[in-house]
Length: 334
Image (cartoon, rainbow, N blue to C red; front, side, top):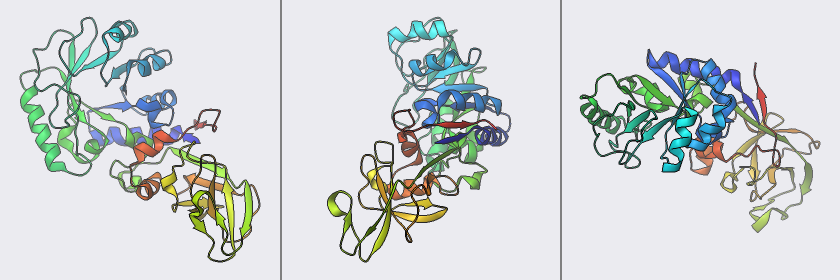
């Protein structure tokens, strides 16, 4: 994996411009959507973000040493035992249920239609309340419902002047100007992935992640011979295949069979069942072992794999494993 932090900084600047005065809060939960939370948070701040958002107190505590003076907002629920840790670390918490903790800045989250975390109505704001927020369910595909959510949010927050309001995610930041308020919590767009499932370049975004390997074995299948579990690929004629030492244990999911990868820069089809540690790719002919294979990057978008798998880029990116036991993550600073 190669993580291009320069591209992430440019994406942050693109979002800052789109927000037209609202603050950009960088969402780096789930280890920065699989890209590396600490490095990506720092790059986003360099690109103009003013705060960093995570899902849990433990995620925030991991970042606190590196981001000593940065505003860290925990978006998910917290247990009573975590409040003291948050207070000591200078975190900000989101309140989605009864009770407002003392001694720690909080954001009250109103459920306006997401049907998940959130209050049904806003309580009286105590002196620890610094923000009011909601989360949009359909900003990527149904703006009418998103606007209805914003109407509920505006009506509920009108009696609380002076508090920071934030509702927009990446999709709303790019498509729904009225959602931007004082700040927008952007995640997927920071990583150069389209919140709409299309080409990120349509919104001026650049993919941050590239994922590459190489052919570890090349062999000729005679007509009628098969590759992989279940004989899901049977050669209709003499066919050269290459074996790539990447599988579903690394995040190359089984439902990506039939999708495309780049072999020496050319698009080639994954064939047979992707296994735990290996995948087969159909070749145009005999190629040398070591021929480069690009799984994501070099013009091959993660959005294409998402369409093949019938899922979203968020899930695929979070599922790519880069710990030393499986792969190596190379962070490019330039």
